[in-house]
Image (cartoon, rainbow, N blue to C red):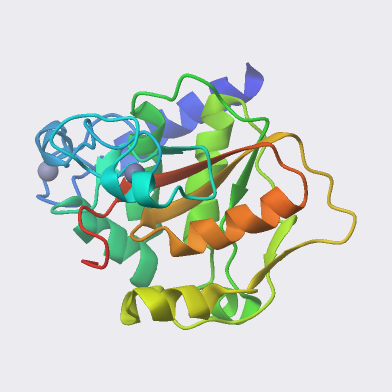
Amino acid sequence: MHKDVLIDGWHAWRAWLLPWRCQLCGAPGMAGMDLCADCAAELPRNRSCCARCALPLALPTALCGQCQRKAPPWDAAWAPFRYGWPLDRLESRFKFGRDLAAGRSLARLWQDAPRPASLPSLILPVPLHRSRLRQRGYNQALELARPLGHALGVPVRHDLLLRTRATTAQSELDAPARRRNVRGAFALAARAQLPADVALVDDVMTTGTTLAECARVLRRAGVVTIAVWALARAPIPGSR
Ligand SMILES: [Zn+2]
Ligand SMILES: [Zn+2]
């Protein structure tokens, strides 16, 4: 309660000093957000998709053709947005332009999106290797996971799942090379205790190769139910 009062006071002070401005068009932003209502309405929502992998589809389905052919190593997916204009602009500023304000807007959009029916006991962001973390200065998945976990009342841990090997950016690779690139790149911290149900969080899900590799590590450690959560899902695998 005390903390909320402080946050409200801070928002009011900040709004007076520096009004919220839409990062896409420059119009006045919505309360507490660097995004206007019109631009937020234009963001592509992933309303109909595969329940298992969140692949955008014309109609919602329990299992898309790809999941029917080969089921992914997780149980359910949640990706409230589709990766496309103008969300991609905010995401690339956040991920590659050190624009943490864009990240805060994205985190807020995620928190306000319709939530999955069941929530996990723990959220694990997809980790960066320490060399990439040094270069970027922050892990974009953790920056999104932390406020999301807070809003959902689910703890977030970034010290349990680790990237033990530096990998090439997946966006530069084709599908078979993506799988090779991340194979064996993740491990659990020594003595990590995991609950039976966990959600893995990433910023954007493209082919899901990275999330699949993380899910296999969790499965081997005895996690029973694994959800993969991403802010946005790319419509066509490999299009990003
Ligand atoms: Zn705008
Ligand atoms: Zn699917």
